[in-house]
Length: 219
Image (cartoon, rainbow, N blue to C red; front, side, top):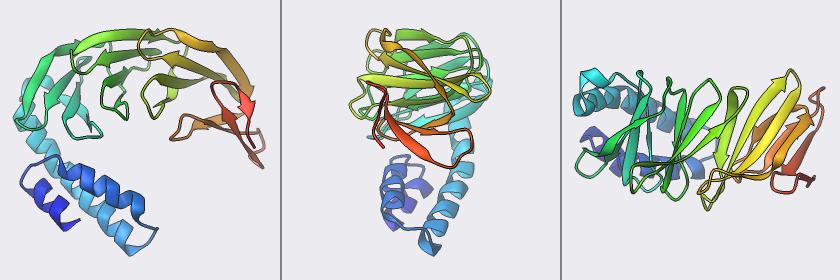
């Protein structure tokens, strides 16, 4: 933790990786609260550093670091994202024009694909190495949650078609095609870290784990 903090204090974003690894190993308690406070303070400071890197004209609204800290991405208020090389803080490729204000962005676990998402139901998947558009995923409603599988080959999205109705979609990240037909479920859902679905019934009295690829209930 001390080494990661030193990296962050020196403006080195790779310190985030050390903090993330440490956070996963800590149980709730004073150490985790201290780590969270350190992280929050650094994020506040780094926002200013980011603005200095990208320039005030971009209006950075959010940023995300790739899992291996090779890249980071910023989202601007004008509806475009930008990839950056962490090592030298230089732009990687042109601006990634999403087409509408970006509400969320994330890297896949391998750092090969970047997701940009907007409230109009559009999700763009970008090839990080080439800084180019890989696929556009269209949804009739706002995407509430999304998650890559561990290998980055699949991408799951959840939308609410109406109160208490969750629609699950599983996409191929390379082609942008649906792997399985959209499935509608009664209940409120959340995506787990392994792209399984945790489905709660309407009364929130029990939970089921559903495999998104097969829609098989595992528990």
